[in-house]
Image (cartoon, rainbow, N blue to C red; front, side, top):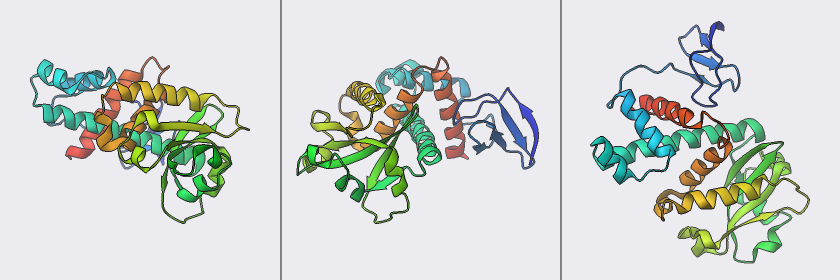
Amino acid sequence: MSVSATTALHCPFCGKGKTYRLEDGRMKCAQCAHKFTPIPRHSHLPEGTIRVIAQRFWEMTPTTAVSAELQLNIKTVQRYFLRAREGMARCCEHSAIAHFGSDRLPLSCFESGPSRAECGVQAQPVCAVAVSADTLSLLFCDDRNDTSCLHTTDDVAGWLYGRNQESIERHLLDQMHLVLHTDHASELPRQFWQFAKKGLARYQGGFRHNFPLFLREMEFRFKVRQRPDAANLCSQLLIYHTIHQEN
């Protein structure tokens, strides 16, 4: 039951302003209905430092430069950058589930898709690109046989895929491609993949150790790219995710 509302505390998942305080002390967002705990003001690092780290992360500043600027161990900076990505990934997963019923699809959806023949016999899927109105989500593939989410395929505009198994295992961007269903008119998938390739290239191969997580980061950045408060939203996510990691 909601007992009060405030516009001072922003939801760390969608960034909207109006949140409600619940009887158990948690907050609930009026926009996305996500429940979260108000951020306690303690951490291994001061909040101001975390906000600077979040700003540098958003600017895609190398961890070595952030470490030197803030006089922090580089592993500490890397840990906070990882938390920022994890927070972004969680937002994207929640969004996919809310809009499309799932954040994953079985491999069989790629094999039986209408554009499969265009990809080549050795092609391996990375993820489906689902689009509904102006909402884009990545639905990653797994080898399950569950067909409960197959209704989601109605919203699949296309697939990101690797030319062969090696391109998937080594995460070779120049051998990953986007194939779109011919009957899907949305330009969002093309815009996203162009955006993502440019963003990933800035990491100079650093994305290869956890490609799905970095791809989720690109998805999040693409979704909020036109928001003037995008950097502040990144700070909120990092602080929120840090508190839950350290408590």
